[in-house]
Amino acid sequence: MEMNKFMIESATRETLSENEFLISLENILKSIEDKLQKFVKSAPKLLTDPELESGLRIIEIEGEKIHDFLRSVVQPYLNSRKDETEPDLQYKYEQMEEQLHIQTIELEKAIEEIQSLKIQILNQSNFCASLGAVLGNLAWRASRFPEIVDIWLSGLQNKVREFLSIVSGSFVAFISTYETGIPPTNNVEYQFVLGLLGIVTNISSIPKGREFLITNQNGRDLVEKIIKFMPNFFPIASGKHSLMRLMLMILYNVSMNNTGLSCLFEFRVAEVLSRCLEEDTLSEELQLLCLRILQSITYNLKDPKYIEDLTTSISIRNIKNIAINGQSETSSVAKEVIKQLQESLRSKDHGVNHFDDEEVIRSFGIVRRRTPRGVGGGLCLEEHKPGKESAAAPKWVLPVAENRSVSRLVTTMACRLIPRATSSGTTLHL
Image (cartoon, rainbow, N blue to C red):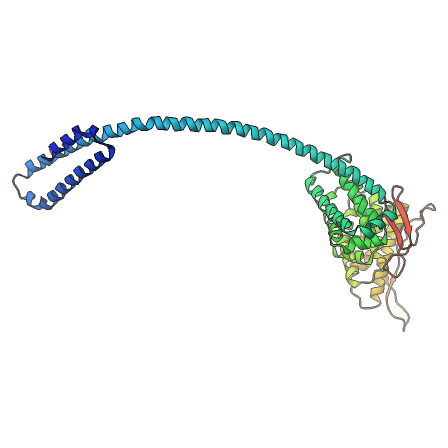
């Protein structure tokens, strides 16, 4: 019988090689498969055979023998393979454990090296910031002399362009880094940015400098960012005062240039100045600077678009309160701003009236007065008369503004700011 063949091959399995054993096993299983197929084909006949029960019993016995054979042949084989595999796996495990140990040591060294590099980078950053603050302040002091700025703009224009790009990027990075709180004034990064803005202030204090600043794309970007990020300084704490002062001085100097004036209106400077004047934390000096910028941009203003922008952006009531309650110089500048806006509105009323708005008219203290027949109707301005001014109020000077047909009325600066009288106007520098 076939089972005898199974047992014979079982007895000799240990002498066979692995391939031979598998081939032999495959042949045996194929033989069993053939016999099962024959049984299935003859099953219908067996159902009518009276010896069916005995035949099924024989099949059951044969199946148990096959099961015992497989258990006696395959299981020992698998066990032998397991015995052969365990040493290999143990060896591989030990190798991987050793590699892991080596990698752990390398990782610890890498972490230590990273920490060391971080400390070096931090020290290098502090050194660069300190060096930048020192050199920036030295260049700031040097730029107080117009001759130095003129040399920069005559032979080093490419470097000045790069410098303006650096100032713009550093200013934005500083604002973004210290968005929640400006560092103390003795911080090296604060001193670095302060020095950069101081240099730009002094560059813009001469006609050639502000012309270069506002016609160069990097300079225009810087002016735009100063206006854009100025609200980030509200409320104005003591640590922000120096930076705000320089930012406002740059805007004032830019306003002396005709192209710069257009840029300031384009960048909506009036809205920012109005918000600044509404701040309770605004110092007298910064309030005066804001008003001086308004005084500069409203002087001899004729463009209807700009007039409308101003009348809709700034709080006239707030400026009138400053004119009434402010100190002598601040009050005088506030009055001049109102007066110049009144003149702008009146000049437009003689032509096509673009601002026939009663609220705007009342806010400026403008009333309509009947005129004799034959005389063109217009707006008569009646300025509110505050209390008597102090006799010690500072006098205003009349410099000549470049690119603008008439002189501009400006005030002398506060004691910490040095006015520079030039043939083209009084500007601010430090």
